[in-house]
Length: 440
Image (tube, rainbow, N blue to C red; front, top):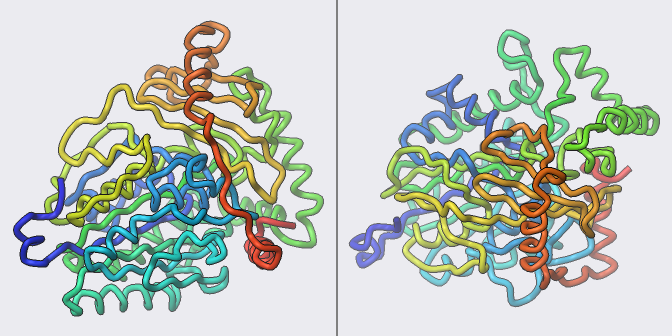
């Protein structure tokens, strides 16, 4: 499905808004749609198309967003972590394709999506918000809403990327959303507040002529999500400067002790795996929501396996132009079924300032294979029967595991890294990451 041909001949192309909500899990987003059908997410889902089997290609913001904008896997575009590398010259983003057909393009982002990555160099306007200014419950949200209203009056198509940070640790829960009657977990309360705020900033009816896409960059671990004031108090010890030096090693030992089953062997190698995100390839970190609504997008739901590499080609097509993406990018099946033989390559962001274990994997509509890079701790799951990934089938189905291993190695054989940052750029990025809590 693409923009109406008649509109394009007359010079009218639909505007496009990409809302990237950091740490937005598919299950929690869809639950919020049910709990608040008149909220922003509920209204969007009701009038648009929802993909219930979407996955990120990397459970870390920088490589995931780079794949959204380039249509390339992290091993193709080279931004495979948070620090040290930039998007190589010669790799375009979808912003370039839209600018060529007359779009004004802008990006308003935060967190690790720093200008030194050179991911947004093709946008007409770029803004980065620091941690204290990132919440949409403050002036940043008001500014975003005002810009969207202003765009509607200029008579020129526009493409806006807005990165929402409020679900990321430390989660933002304003007054009015802190009671246990609303929800048990801090995450769900933050999501309810975010949904209500987006409905306030982007009221129903204000975006009917805009192609709106809401996605999560990756999921989130909620197994240790704090509940109530006592839970929040204990959780804060993990991040409070005077106590985190002692609290985090204790948490890592507890997690490592609990990751003893054969299906979770990778967790023993990545003992931070149940804290926040980024450190493994299990489904809670991979499954994200895809919600699209706008001119020509039929309402409905699809369980087709789709991923972030499909987004850039889709945004281009909806805008009446073309953007290729990489060899694995298919575009979202907005009016048809997905490919039952689809393969999605997964990887953790292994170029990290935190201790981690590089893992790679291959996802199909039915199966998931993953291993620590180099072949250690392999795991194979039949997701059609074991969606919670409790039963590792590597020993029972060695031929299937070997076939996926060989496919994976073939697909990533030409892996690359981005261009090296300068020493000054790397030092600045390291300071920003420290301010965000990524570094001690």
